[in-house]
Amino acid sequence: MARLVLLVWSLGPMLWQLYTSFRPTAALTGAGGRGWTLAHYQQLLNGNPPFLTYLLNSAIVGFSSTLLTLLLAIPCAYALSRMQAHRARNISVLVAAAAAFPAVLLFLALLQVARDFHLANNLLALSLPYAGLCLPLAILLLQAAFRDIPVELEEAALMEGMNLWQRLRWVLLPLMAPAISSAALLIFIFCWNEYPIALTWLSQSDLLTLAPAIARIAGSSIFTVPYGAFAAATVLGSAPLLLIMLLFQRQIISGLTQGAIKG
Image (tube, rainbow, N blue to C red):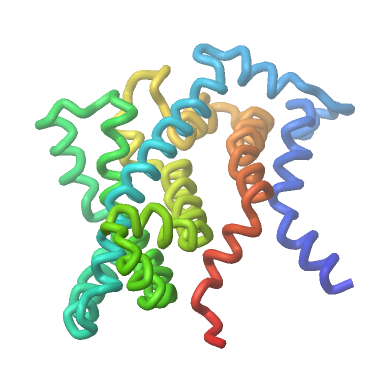
């Protein structure tokens, strides 16, 4: 019973959004409407541009940012994990401070960078600030995972004649797959949901990512609130993340708990 209550409590907001997305506007505003409708989804999918464009833009930004962050974070985390303890500790403190730094304080600086280097309205360029913001946390997560791998395993590979790249490619990274999956998911979720930077870097309607696009739907009129369209957009925007979580839940849980238990 307790599990059922917890499940309903956790899924409540999502189920309410799903319910709202299928209700007619008249029913949502108390005008007496009844039944169910697909009009809100049709409005989004047939819009100009179609809502799927925003999902594709978010996917492009999310995957490019995740890839760039991991390419930078993996060698940094490996170097920290194999560094002398006192030096690694000092650097880790700085990385942790960077991870805890409020990103909103960088907003004006990032806006000036976009203007000076003409990075506005470029989806791939948006991955640069996203990767910079996600990099400290990714380094900390991957550093802990690298430390859990016995050094003796790497030394054995070295005795077999493997160079650094071969040891990373064939020995360390396969063992790091759960931790890398967890870090990649956290990065992707941040990029998928990020709002203020995307709002200022992207102004063309066909280049908007999901968060600014939903904000435009919610504020499309000062006289009425499009509850149904907003709920439908939320459902469509959440579906890819839910699918990823369902497909990779084992790797994600394993990566988040890696190193939590020492046996």
